Length: 266
Image (cartoon, rainbow, N blue to C red):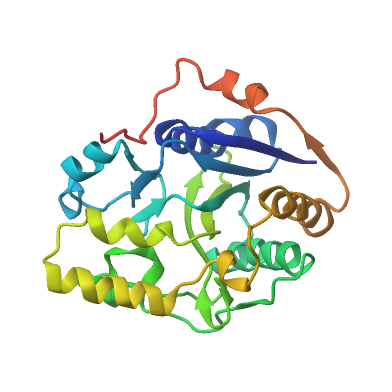
């Protein structure tokens, strides 16, 4: 029985702590996998779990009133603004990292294509250990992995995954990612500790390698329609028709008095 819920727009720390709690507490206790949609208010910059805070200008974020938070997953910096964010928590005891990526990506592709977006898989593998040694890769949206989703040959969805060992010997996978609906993710370059020349090059690279749903020629991206299509895709592709929908408050009540690894950095 899959659980589906839409959290709406939340502060960065609450978003990341809820994903962490679902992976470390909810799923081990209930064995009910979750597909969650959410947004960010205020906008936020998130760092990968091992990424240095020295990569970003904290004062610049503070002046704009934006959040800075550390994700429980790896990867590089993401500026969460015009996007729909998803997270999925499921058993991965018999699934590899790529198995989970493929499973989730096929669900997202099904949802987006059902409402007319011509999305595809990237189809190529990246050596991310080498890529992340390059300072220009400080953004998550400079490269695509095999099962990440593209629109018109450019990256539309950026995702990250973390796997947790359970006491019963099983594995829980947390994967979350950003479905870009506008261009504000490009503002990431304004908050990075890089020189002006590198900033211009990185923004150009991001413009060349990433895209968003607003580039499809529509005046306004239908967020509610996209969310509805995602729900149907989860029901049909993951839940086999067996799902339960609960309000955000149902889940948030279980987080009280919990300790978290996820940090509020600003």
